[in-house]
Length: 191
Length: 102
Picture 1 (cartoon, rainbow over the protein chains, first blue to last red):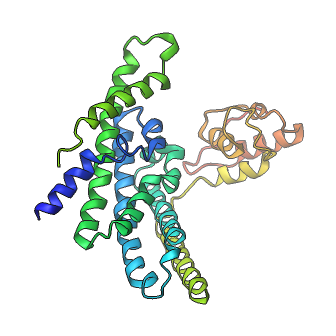
Picture 2: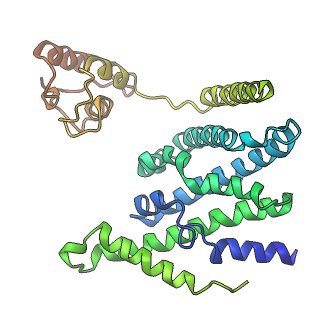
């Protein structure tokens, strides 16, 4: 249990998917303009990562390994992730059209979000057992959502503050992201 | 090799089937006029109207954001008239017709 807890903390903060591994940068810059769509994106990514990890883990250990097809893992995982993103898109379109609109093109782009594939592959590469796999695939999107939300609140403040003309918009956001990454690197070695 | 192909085929078929079923249950009713207007536009997807593609302009026309078909530059005169006539005569889900200029 203690191992799982330290894996959880390490995955959320120390090995944070955005700020220390620099994966999933596209939605990080794209959907962080306001905090409500950041939460929506976090929810969508969480759903896709947890569901795709469960399915890919099952497929890898139930189908690919017994058939000696371990080398097929990448293409199988991409297939699963792409269909799950399609499903998520349909659900969001049905449940919340306003969220669907605010996520725009970034919703289908979850397919190519490397964070999703990273979690599916790391579960295999690190030899996680089922409990570790579940902890890891819940912790990573929580870290993703947390950083996305913090970043979006900072950007909301940036919109109303006086920024030098040359740095307006994305440049200052990139600088802020860099400072956030520096701050997070201070957590290294905690666990 | 054979197993690999069969596995991929089965997996693809299963996922496709699942998505097909899901799309039936999760279908969102869209205004039929959007589809019709999209087909009547030139479909060059040139973007000169300011929308990403013809379907974007069709949606804007049906929602009332754009009231002149002339926003579409490459559209020919008779096409514009046909679209305006269609939108002015076909009632939407609320039973009202739009007022669109050519």
